[in-house]
Image (tube, rainbow, N blue to C red; front, top):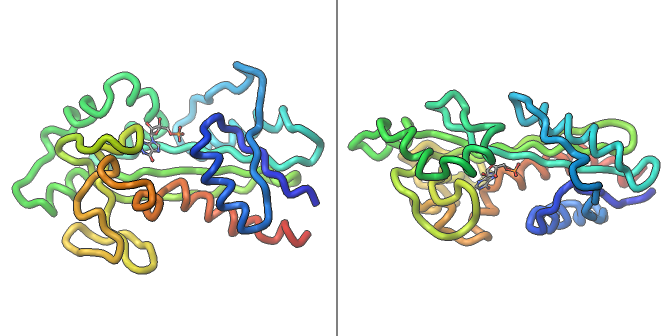
Length: 221
Ligand code: IMP
């Protein structure tokens, strides 16, 4: 069996992360190159719909019959805004940026830090979709947390400087704001911690883990 997964991305960081995951199964990940402008960012209200629409477009550009192809999409979902910016995360970040997001939530504050975190709760979510040559598998990953009161840290990208992840227990499950977990940034934003620390919480990692679990059987096919 051909064990190459063609990933529709031009982001070297995402490619390296996916390579790491699929190498567990002895699979290689390569970037799927498509003619410029041939993939249209779909207008859809959920990440699942976006990923499925993208994978159907990517399947038009398979390097060979039966090739496996992977797409991944992510976003920030703020609970007090009913999940906004969600699928519009890139656009909102490019237009109003982190400062705009902080302004939108400025009224949500409390002197009690745990209550503030609850009022400002949010999650990063990622959906990965893989065409295995026969069917589409969809994997999802969530990273729970809250929006900080001010941007902090120069690390990461996008909303990292305003996102504080919830602590995790030993099994990687998120805990409520009063509980100190086995994995903790101690209230620091993703922008203030190193990539290794962020990786432990990563929504993208969880979505890929989910896919890898679903396609394990393929390597023995
Ligand atoms: P993409 O689908 O992975 O490109 O993510 C869409 C947008 O969501 C990005 O442009 C970022 O603004 C935001 N985003 C997704 N994942 C992250 C993250 O891990 N940190 C910060 N921002 C993120």
